[in-house]
Image (tube, rainbow, N blue to C red):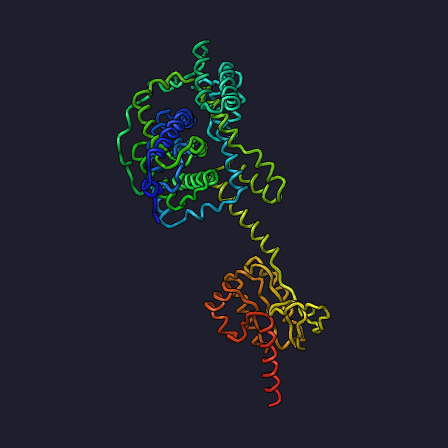
Length: 569
């Protein structure tokens, strides 16, 4: 159900919350300005595109969002998606793809897919975020090394790295030095003056050093000339069937990343605040935000973890903080856009270097390496595919592979075995002063009559465990000395799927042909409901589906007595 958090929070809103939200929003602006510009430039677009996107998308995402403190804007993850779309379809194609992606996200939210999108395995998340960090850093090497704008650098990762290596002789050492100064300044401010906005201070230091020493490095104004301060006009992109068809895959890529990253960001925010975000509402809000951004000529947007964390640490209480951040950003874009022209591109490259380092979670890499090797393999494969192929391909392959490994693990803990001899013991007198009470589903001390075979299924009874079940049960039925009654104990089966139901139906038919009575014991609620809907309880007879082993053995004795009477008569 679509329930924006803002509409709930505004009911008891007061001045104390507004004051906290105002100063949090003001603080986030300081971080949003350099990051928004840097990400737009990394895509090969004018810096104002990043500012407009963070401003417009951030406003609508906060207005309709499902998280109380999340900040939305252009993020680094989109760089590796935007660049190839721009090369193939141009800016108009990117804007149209963003609009389509917004519609997709809106539909996903309406279909309540938010909860499902959160079930992405941790190794896959670490793999694709780390891969994104490597790709973004590779796109910044041009500005960090100060290569001339005329030099063509391919978009594909290995081709880009090869071109950069071959042209190292054209590198500008002043750009490299300025980038290093910016990175060093950011780290020093984080270490010794954590209350200052480190990213902004690093950028200001870079501007100051360039201005004082007149370094021959490229600036925003040098590459993009005058920075536009006029807001883009509302315009609906031209849509026709051929265009939409050609942009469906890029749009799906944008929607996937926007959905995954926004829900991941909201989950991180939940951990910091204790709030529980509304995933379906958040997906719908991101859809609205991306549609609004596209209608004003903006770029794709999603929840920004760095800005959201800053918002929380600055004392934000409600989505009003994010709305205030967009309004302040609007004022600065309109009145102060020309000031950005003096920013050296190497300084922005330094900012993104720090961002990429933070995105590349080497601690998680180490932790996952110490865990199951299959998880580490999934992470490495996702990482490699993100860098070498495509983000969506990486996530899809990673999720599918992780799911297959999970199925294998579930199949390993699922088991079926004959337990007749284990529980076929004479009841002994208890000589202790306090005899243990008898439980109807106890494993031992059961009287198993001759001609009865008991099997037990442990763990989820699903398609991954069927092969082992067939090998034991059906091989047993192929022997000569068959029992009169077969008991299938299912007390440890919490879930059953259609494949297992089909096998049980086949087993019931084979038992009926061989004149073997089949009794089920300890069937839990989900398997029982499934058996009933599938018609297996009716096929077996309701009396042959028992609650525990005691009632199952009572039923066995009744069947044996009936068979004995039938033979005598």
